[in-house]
Image 1 (spheres, rainbow, N blue to C red):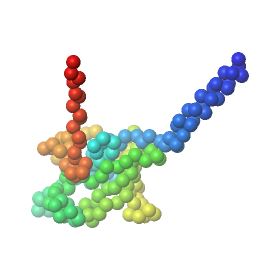
Image 2: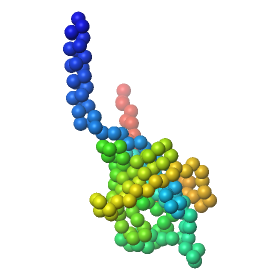
Image 3: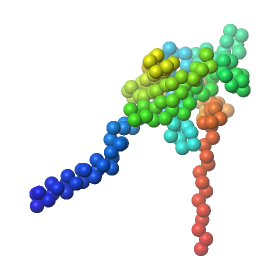
Image 4: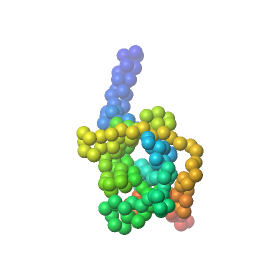
Length: 189
């Protein structure tokens, strides 16, 4: 009987390993949603789930240490290659575009830099419960890593509304639409 039990156990382990197969090396990323103070303290970025299935991560500027220029005018996205976006204010705009989970347990995709109007490759991951690492790359080997600190307080001038609401950030059109749930059809008797 002992031999039969070992045989059954080996078969069960083999089946489990075959089923898990390609997924065994993948690490589920820790959700980075929340509000983060960037390394130099100039801005706070809110990360949240986005996209039609809410499976990606988007990021928005929700607070700026200096949201206006010397004339008291809000800073604008004047370097944006899309002429329609050049008049938008930097406070509230989307800079992290639909990052996807990676097998390494991170989220990766593109980040927009309003200072030069260009997109760069980026990956993010939680370094600890209240710290986030962000690695941005100009090209594969020219990268820089920052540490962002999670914030739980609200600063004066910080956008606290939901994305798309009056006192909230604004998603770029490709990330703003979330399909409505499909209505459940009642069966006729």
